[in-house]
Amino acid sequence: MAAAARFPVAPLVIGALVLAAALPLVSSNYVIDVGLTVVTYAILALGLNIVVGYAGLLDLGYAAFFAIGAYTTALLETLLHLNFWETIPFSMLLAGVSGVIIGFPTLRLRSDYLAIVTLGFGEIVRIIATNLDITGGPNGLYGINPARLFGHDITSPKAVYELGIAFLVVVLVFVIRLGRSRLGRAWTSLREDESAAEAVGVPTLRVKMLAYVMGAVIGGLGGSLFAARFGAIDPTSFTYAQSVTILIIVVLGGRGSLPGVILGAIIVAGLPEALRFIHLWREFAFAIALILLMLVRPQGLWPARLRHIAAPSATAAHAVPEAEPSALVADEAGDVPAPHRGTLLEVRGISRIFGGLRAVSDVSFSVRQGEILSIIGPNGAGKTTVFNCLTGVLQPNEGSILWGGASLVGLAPHRVVALGLARTFQGIRLFDDMTVFENALVGMDHRYRVPLVTEMLALSGARREAGRHYAACRNWLEFVGLADQAGMRAGDLPYGDQRRLEIARALAGQPRLLLLDEPAAGMNPTEKQSLMGLIRRIRDLGTTVLLIEHDMLLVMGVSDRIIVMDRGGVIAEGRPAEIQANPRVIAAYLGTEEDDEDVGALGAVA
Image (tube, rainbow, N blue to C red; front, side):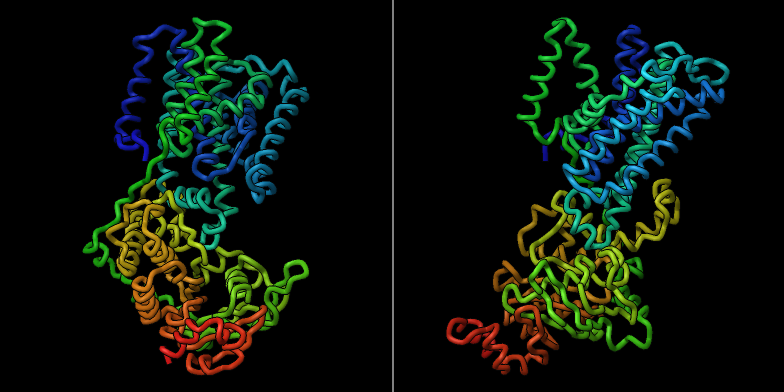
């Protein structure tokens, strides 16, 4: 991590806010006016930081929400004669609704496409404001009343500045609480790997929508403050350049870093004023300085650091009855409808076609509760495609997939996870910039029942639920042997430990069926032996295991049944001894003379 991250952030932020609040006592009106501009940009950047920094979505039209908030306050004051405080809820609400309207159809897009759409949205809002009579057209709106508090107008630069500081503190506390909530973890996982986040239970579309709406609400609040500050607004204040300026603050300070956002606002909004003595050259000097800073420090001036959640100690974890892995899995197994206790999952004739390629063809099998079932086959046999169809990543073109008698076809991956199926990936897909403990917590996202508002207010119900989940995650990390690495960055773990963490993350969701996609890939013999023991212990807890693997010693050593695939279809099914002796399997998968090592492995197991 960067050097800045070694310093305690909270005291520095609090100290900066105290100094900022004291600025009117020692400064001229001009300096106070610049300070208020910095405060306004900081509020807007905190909102955009949710979208860009936390959730990793590129928004080039954020000034649209700024404009919506400002025009809402202006219109409600000039037409309906509401006071400033009465307009704020409407500004935030309308900005939030606008976020839903633009977000719902566009947030399925990614990267450049999303950026283009948001850019267009920002320009549409500005053009509408320029052309409507009710908004004053290009001349804007005037006569906006200032805020009043206890019968006094807030008009002096010092008073308006203190109001801005109060708004900044409220927004900062709100954003801090969001970042530390389960929603904040979901946003971070989304930024790290959207597909993996969805596959472990995060409802990515809903989470992206919430990021967009939360950012829009803060933008609307900033617009209300802007309108009350100047008493007049016009479309030139809400251009594309304004959106870019706010984005520069976020990127320059460090995406996802709250101190970085404050620092970025000071530099971007304040430094040009400090360079006024060089007149026409100040913009050029400022641009050069920004380029140099980004070259030297591309991660931002104050990069976001790992959030160390206070994981309970081993003793504390075991003190929570629900946190024991065996008890948790037993409870989940008890939820399976009685008629289906024998068969958990039934696959009937599924096929998956990519263009003209039939990757999976008429595959049928069942998974029985409490067994370890392995799927083997050569590369390209369709094994992972079957996994993707089972978990909702892909939808089969034909056939049915039944879980407890109900169809899984058509369900999104996060809904499949919520029903009790969890998976790992052929290539490790952890959230590298999150801690080991946070990775496991993300796997429990779908198990939270307390409303987000309750969690953000830190009410007793939310604290109790968080305590249970923290204890459960601690126990799952102990179960796979990673409890001592709970505070480490996941990307810094050795390869074998990363594999085990991926399994712990899947287990944290307390699945009834665990799908492991080549978990031994890249492991050394010692790690493979340890993995064999771990898979058996998972089964002993009551969790059924469906395994894809190429290592024959591991497959034959742990499997109760084996399914063999070749060219998209099932060519054999049976117990390990039956598969070992099947000539078709040997010819299609193991080979004869060319694959002596695998044949030898089968013989050794036999």
